Length: 431
View 1 (spheres, rainbow, N blue to C red):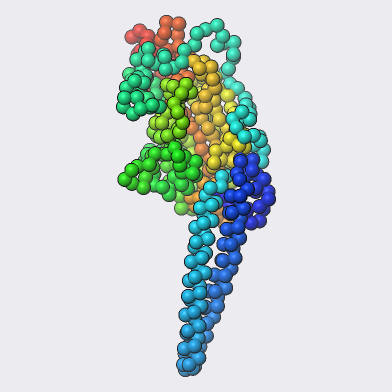
View 2: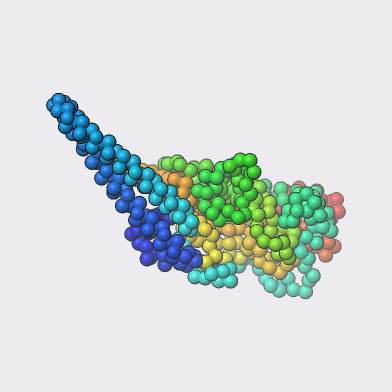
């Protein structure tokens, strides 16, 4: 969550920044009024406690001097002050609960240099890697779902029979391809990131404090009989690991990676943009998460972007880096770069990784702090991004690898992990 002091000490500037994210001023005004009310009530509580303590001290002195009548009157006064304090404290608790609820609905502030805009149409392409439009002319490119069904590696009918729309069944070499992609991503990131295998379900407190229950409250899957949620991204579990902790400065940066299955409802009717593996309710992903000192977060963000791009370059997939405009930023992020791979089968750029700088937004919610050497305790900055989200990368590998004979040749870097070089080729290519 944002620092509530901004609402009291710098309200106008904070409102202007959040307006770039489309935040209604009424919500901020409500939060400001509650923050001011809380400040007044805290002062009242402090004053009431001081008054009660002074009377309590006087009672002790009167008892020692054996002035019973005066002591009894002071005792009655202390009791009345105690009842008054209880009422003021109850009001403060109500205000704090209302303030917490309101502030939890306010997103992170966008970085000042994030481009203005309201939708993805206003996002900015920063650079493109390995894309030559002429290389895709004069050839009949096929979408991955057609290729996958023909080669028997993708079975949408049985997926629908098992689970309904927007689920996938991968078979044979298709399953090996997915497993190879995740193994490749984990291997190439292991020099900088510690591998974690977290639970795939988390408590409500954990998903809320990472900002994802607000973002995904209509999309997350909740277990019917437990106060547990299926994770919408590995970031939720990795960030939750350090909630309520104070780290030493020497421990930073903390870098984690995790291969997880993720679940999102992806609300909306199925259509042409959800065919095949373009958009799924359940998908496999290698997630990268980092905790660092505030002064290091911008540099670490760009390093994380490079880390997320590395497997795409190894796989020889054309991609571009897109900076999201203020109105398209996610709830928790102050800055987001998307990596989009070109899909020749649908002639579209598809997001395969979203790298976010979250600043101290999640760490304030989750109370994740660090102690500077010989200095104060501060909130860490957090970053996250997909090291490799398999569905669309799987689709891109299949579409780009399509050969004239209908087989699919895999990128060289992937062959040791998939155990095959060609899908649908002869036995020699399959070894």
